[in-house]
Length: 204
Image 1 (cartoon, rainbow, N blue to C red):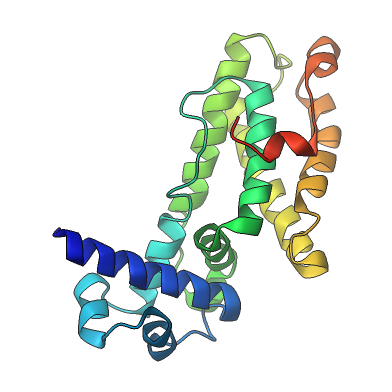
Image 2: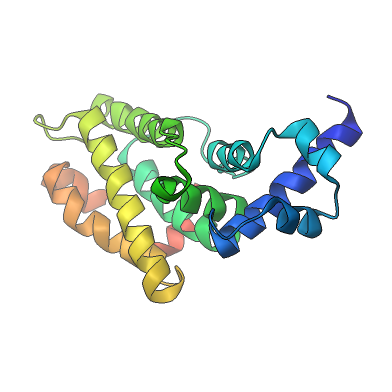
């Protein structure tokens, strides 16, 4: 794709993320997105077939551009990663919009599960590394817990959005870990883990 076309797609995608974040799927129109992007119908439909296609792109590409760890490093990094995502949801409109659209899929009819599968896989890789390091209890299934963690994070951020527009999300995620960790990690591992909101402010 030519550089100009890439820039146009980025501008439209970012504008769509802003509008979806503010108004949700039902409250968003192509016209509103184009006004925000300062673009044309022709440019939009060159890159995206429909509003549904654009929403799907926002969901799938929600984590693009985030500065996240490149290699798994175990349980501490997993804790830090979730705390970082809590802060990124306060800052990144693409992530916020992607998460909102993923949660509100009954409204849009998208049925786009791949982004949840992606986060489950990312968390599971950290848990696989944690298993290699002896950081998990024998009865813990890495894939099952990854699913539980994604579901727990998703529900927690929804509640935080309603209560404080996610202002308290990092604190809620730290609290979530304080209750989850006894079920997955031995006492000696928990003693050396740090569950601190501040660890999510900068890249792990």
